[in-house]
Length: 419
Image (cartoon, rainbow, N blue to C red; front, side, top):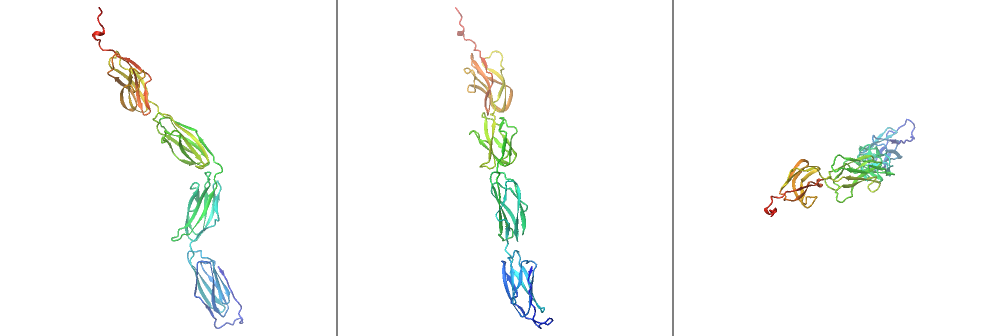
């Protein structure tokens, strides 16, 4: 509080006083606007006088004698959200006292900071601070404008009036500059005051990326998973590149699409019940999707295996007239949908395009099977193989069994009596 005093010596002898003093303030109260203000108040008096001011919430109020018949009132902008009041007291030398009330209208809500340009971070993690200057309650939000998100942390997200805010930046993880805007907004109802602070972090000066192994190989039967190990100082992403158009890549699954620094990718695949060897390439990019470092991992899955036929034998003993029975076993990684015998009198290596005896199947293995070829033509030689089908294809027994049928009883003309 700045209080100005003014006094002058009386021309009267010491101890002599007027029987009355004239002192009149031309205004009963003063209303000041919220802005910085200077006001002159006139008085009427015929004596010496002093002036003083008192207030509980008005520290920048200055009241001083401007002349023998006036005072000057000076104040800065009201920073409070309430009116400021003060009492100005006039005192004459003869003991007469007068008072004048002064009120300044409440100030507008404001939110400001002491940051002139922006907060800057290098690629390493670090902290910076700034001051919020406000006369209202407020909250803080962060919008990330360039680069990745969630790389800033604040020691406070809400408060009121003046407060220091600490901003912590995580280590840069890409070759792209990161930018964000911190916005402080008044939460007082009906108030739109706000301020913002720009934050910038430098990109990584170099990108490190190592990936192992260079190739993953899976069997046709999916079992467990394999891992790609990644060592990096930055953020990274992974995606699949198809090198064979017939593959739709749905047979490969990654447990994540990207990560940060050192990590692992778990790779899984589905069963391959086709006769085609599957191939794809995993691309790992570190730094930024449009640049940085890039590595490749080849992913291969073996083709599905055909069923295996074992112990294919002829069960019929003795002469073969018009039928023959055969036995065999089969085993497969995938369900056998059909199995049987194929035979031909002309094709020494018969296939299912020749004559067949078939059975529907729904198992992966069978043993002790017995199938019979009936209505065989007499006096013919037949070549016979066992077969089994799955989604992978058709498998045949390694061995071909050759059989011959006997003829019917001879006709009289078949063996004429000699003369």
